[in-house]
Image 1 (cartoon, rainbow, N blue to C red):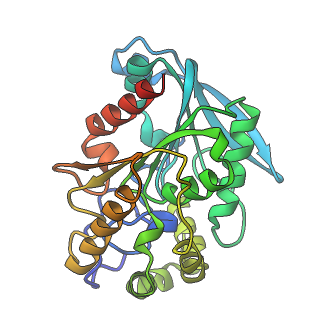
Image 2 (tube, helix red, strand yellow):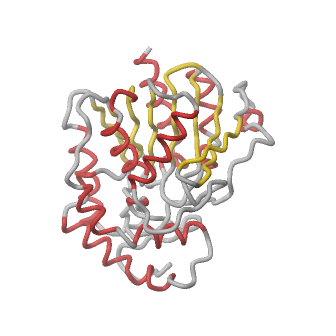
Length: 306
């Protein structure tokens, strides 16, 4: 990672990707802390000492590539956990048993294309392709109604497009410092792309990790994709809880941090069926820093739906 531009914060694990991939430090990098795929050899519930049931792995094909979905059994609403850019399903390994115990819901995590145990798809990263993958997985698993999406960072874009296409399938969403359309003004899109260019150039021909390859895929289509994303909105019929981080993804850039905070609040306050929560003492990595906040808000939404 190039650490000389004002948007870049120190690495906290591997690379981090902005929006269409998450934003950590404001550069176009993966939001990842681990690229190790989740396994079912030992249940997270057993490791955590809870009574939650072990998950099972389902390999589901969509448009010629296979995707890994992990299902912890339970009853509705169905909680679907979608990690940020550069991450796979293992990102949620501590939250899954806690949510299973608190809610009794069926819980689904998955590896997006090119991450974890899921097969890669060549070409630029597109949120619409990720929506197609998620739709195929949920349909195959019978999760066609009462879905609660819990979406971190980049996954906010997938949640927005998915919810617009399938509002009848959704019971609600918890958007965890998510990439929202309101942030991507022409000014912010240009600033993020420019701040990331040196890092992207340095990786071309040298990408070694899955997060590196995703970074390049996101960068290939970043500006036009986010100009388009800025023009869409969230369906009014679907309730949403916004959890904003205390630091934002731009801890070293005050103008961008303010733009991020304002976008989160503006989205949350645009409808009466939305809720706004700030996770105190948290970086952009809220599920790691404050899993208790995520657990509490997801649990509250699920219980309100019953």
